Length: 114
Length: 114
Image (cartoon, rainbow over all chains, first blue to last red; front, side):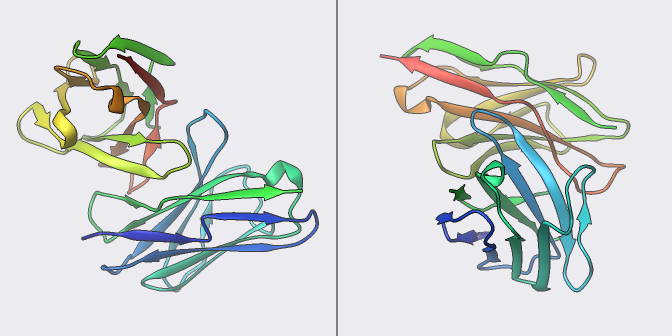
């Protein structure tokens, strides 16, 4: 149990376009979902925390208008990178919590902006 | 504020030898401690956790970790390393008194040589 999926696994987009990444909890209801960004050979940086039905809480330094997060249901959260630029290229990982002390991680999405 | 330190960027070990990956933490409340492993272009895989109870925690793939409150450490160990253990390892902490955010260490790359 506690499986989290992400779609797509890889995406290439042109500079200036927007791209949406989905995070789904497949076999449990996620009261909270988290979005992380990971640069090559670096640790995970928490971008935002989202609770179902409410606005996401962004970490300091993360532009909420650029990284739009929607937690529409207890099994789905989306991250939209708007007006993407090459510096947004990164590995994005989501995790989901069902209200206990654990987070269950998705497999990640590799975004490349050309 | 909570923080995690992994003092070694990389650990090299010969196959069959013991493996230790170091982690120290700082929290204001009770620590919830986690170890994850990441293979290239993949998400995080859970190895083990300490919430309460026995200081020695056994996890997946033969890994274990020892919680040491006085030294604020949670080192990951494996008695006999395998080449397939070569990966990136992350220690993470959640402050029991500060919500459900995880803070990650910088990661330690483990290279097991045959």
